[in-house]
Length: 191
Image (cartoon, rainbow, N blue to C red; front, side, top):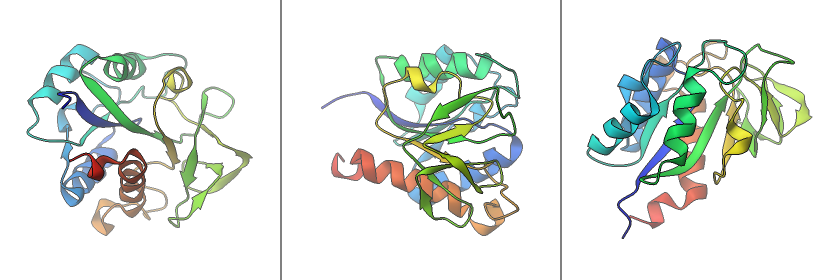
């Protein structure tokens, strides 16, 4: 049996994202690494791996944020370090859309719109489907195409999307993205 920690990486780390991710982690019986919150990310990849290893159980939901910095910023450097670490198994990534059109984008395997519907199209920060299939624009997504992960799910701005993903409503879009990653990864079958 592997001692690798199973994680879901999330490319958003503002206060709204933190509340949503904490709520969803509790709902699914996982752990949110709340200390990974930051806009931009404050902790290094090495610090995050140490904290992940200290959590009592999987899956661990970890946030990363570049705060709109173009190119590979602090959040992406930390994300790459965590994703490539030998003691970490990435179950999937939630790629969060931002308003940074024509700056940074990534491929996504599937998106979830603000109504909770699966779509092959990318979505914008409001969770509205865009015109391109399998692609979203964001500010902490520059390096995702370099990573070999099982699934990348695109969604709008976590905890927001015209209040449709508010933690007060249970963050249903974020929760659906996490559940989709757990289902596709076979997480529950490996317990």
